[in-house]
Length: 81
Image 1 (tube, one colour):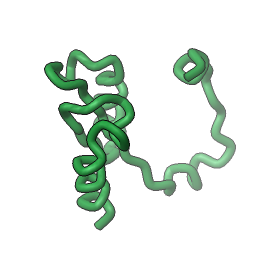
Image 2 (cartoon, rainbow, N blue to C red; image 1 turned 135 degrees about the horizontal axis):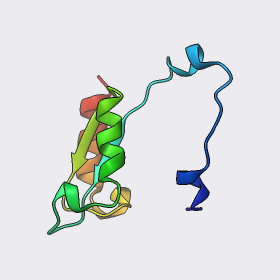
Image 3 (tube, rainbow, N blue to C red; image 1 turned 90 degrees about the vertical axis):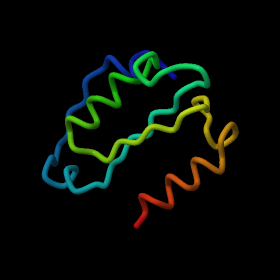
Image 4 (cartoon, rainbow, N blue to C red; image 1 turned 45 degrees about the vertical axis):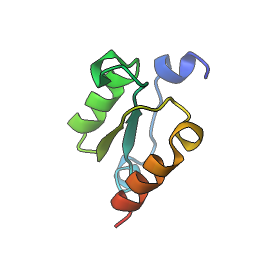
């Protein structure tokens, strides 16, 4: 992923409309690590502060669709209701 993804600011033209777009955050945590040790933990915290649904999927890697597909599906199904 390009570094500018994290550093370059964006300008939202219609903030009222963008606020209505559903959003959620899933933090994937490698086996043997705690959530706070994960590189993306700060984004998980920011998602919580923004009142997004934020979940932790442990014992997996960043490609949960391959490393923990069953856990990912259960999490997505539980949040789709």
